[in-house]
Length: 405
Image (cartoon, rainbow, N blue to C red):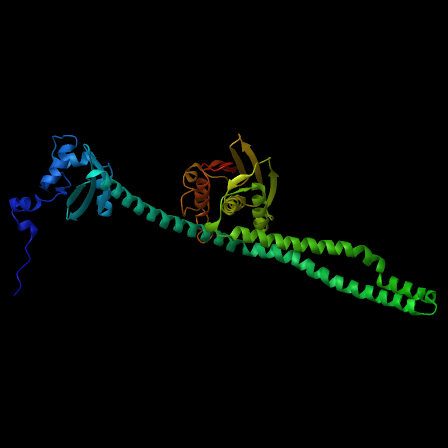
């Protein structure tokens, strides 16, 4: 028969104090109403280095902890961080446990001895923060790319239409070209027969008849125009595919480069125009901009988000105006103004929050403006909003020409 386990609370207080006395780490056990249940010598010595208090050890501890440390421990179960107790640098940990209506805190302290220990602790914390940052950055990149591909998916039908339209008339022109070639070969054969005949002039009436019947004069006028239209259609398809490729490119390996912002604007407009053209009149008021150091693929996504939002804000017919300009010598701005329904002051405070959307369920992710805000912040810029309900909205992106080093 095994013996019942010994409860720690069954140990007499002097025994606990004796067991904890040799510990170099401080230990303080107290309740939510600041009643100290247990404190070893190391904890008392460290707290004595802090500002004196007539309210007891627990209040001394509250005085050196950050204001939100105990609340964080209650919510998350624990808190840890660096503390300064007098001239000592201390690593502190606070654990919380609730038993019924009673809350208990266990605080542990370890003094960092010497510069080497302090630097080692700082390096460990730095490594932990760096790992957390890398995980967060990787998650952000995946979220950015997912939102970008979701946007392209929503535009897929429009992009397909923009490609099918020029492909359609190029295909039609090729059919006409095939007929034209057949007619021209017929005329060429007639000329060859005439050249081989003893009297070529005798076949001139036949050649004239063939030319009139096949309307060779019209073909000679129409051919250059037909070829020019076909070339323009192929170039348009090439441009759309190139813009789509640039837009969908993942920014993981993209480097900062000096870019013409107008080229990115036109590329984005070219992709989404089928989504807007049936109800939007687009005005361009471009200023003279210097080349701007940026991540062009990410800025293109911001342009797309703001243009699509402006289009969605317009119920039936309206206008979107895209403006650009310089702000002194060190910054430029890009502005999108629409004549849509505007944004109420209540919603204005939340539109950059992740997953917030005013669209019906299934019509938007609520990430467009949040990601746009993050991208502009990453570029050390800002987004200014001016909106009047019933009149429209104006979003202005302000970007530095060169990124700070």
